[in-house]
Image 1: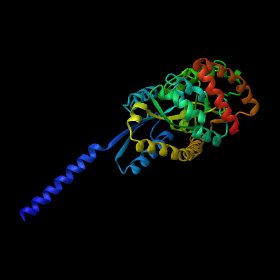
Image 2: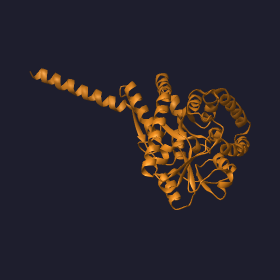
Image 3: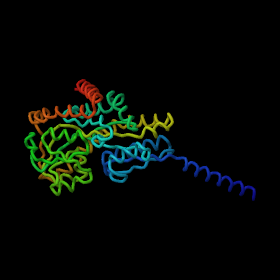
Image 4: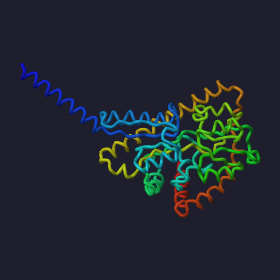
Length: 339
């Protein structure tokens, strides 16, 4: 009997040691996003977590860090490059000082105006995944995917129908050299501010308006402190998912393939989420603020802004050089094909 008890205790001890070893060996991947819990980025990260953990049977766990938890978007990218954080989902507008070539996707009136066309472009573009990805790698970043959060909408304290209406208008933009030039070209006075400070700046009249998709406008309550929502058709909010190249290259071939196949699967998933979010959030804004005025610029009004936007192409080339010219030409050719 003693022998049996001894054997059972030994077996239990061995199982406990094995379990502890498994727990020690389990990988934890940190995934930082620049938006709040319940946002589009959070939906992407949560689905990525769910699929990775299921496919690895728990050998990999993912911890998600929302807006402000680990720092500013620029700091998140730096942490990814250093391997402190494994993944970051950051808007391209916050990459301007790190990967200047990525500002290609901030040029107003350049990408297709059709959501399906943009989704197809961002999911399979050779310019992005064969060419632009190299510029990320030079900065120690592994670009996994780009996706759109939907059309950008201006929330303003006055009606805007043409460039003249932007006179003495302080428009909040992300900290990006090309965005500053883009909205200056459109006639506004661009004012860079961190995302978390925008509501207060609008409330205190430090800025006159801001640009974001409907989902972000509802989540951050920008509609409470502005009087107009304006669809000008100038661009969509393009966002990036990346890792550090040093960390990524330490992974096994199987782990790298796991990440590639999961981000590919999420292209269709996030497209549906974006459509659902923007539709639902717009209805919530209408309910919460029935007096807010919603304006969709007509084609003639958009054409006036579109003409102004051509100057921004030259500014992008000045920033990104011959490399920028090559990327822009290639992207415009792809867009032409899609349209």
